Amino acid sequence: VKVSVDMAGSIEAAARVARRCVDYAMRGASLEEVISFRRRMTKELRATGTKRKAPPSATKGASSKAKFLAEPAPVCSSSLPTRDAGHEVGRKPPKAGVKWLYDMMNTRETIAERKRAGMSGAQVYEGLSKEMATYFKRRSCPNVRRREDRTTRDLHRLAAASKRWSLCSDATEQLRLKR
Image (tube, rainbow, N blue to C red; front, side, top):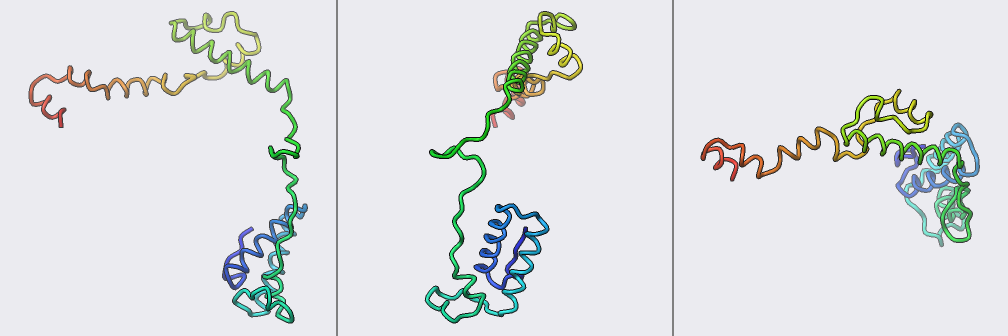
């Protein structure tokens, strides 16, 4: 939800409205409710016409906008899982999903090693679990590491200075390469 200075009248008021909208959303309000809350807050601020934040001592008997701006933000703990001490961490991933992920990573590495060794076709998939073999037969199995990509290898080969020097056919090309 966006709150601009034009809507609220000042940067401080816009920040305050934004914080209140976030707090309202964290308490479970829907997007429509937060938007209507923001409209109501900015409408109140524009109605008062005050442009500057009043100091905390001036809030007694001041306008509702000044009171609104001077009011401290409510402190509330997050309902999201955190890794801080004393707070519970989010639930653990399902064991079946984690096992499948590790099996897939190991199988992909095995396929890459076999392809590097020169195997091709059905030889690459021999000895793998039936589930993983059918999965990787249906899908492309690109290189496991980017540095093993054919384009990356060719680019490094092209950028190798000793190779470029050996490709030079005469002294003028070597002079150009030195620059």
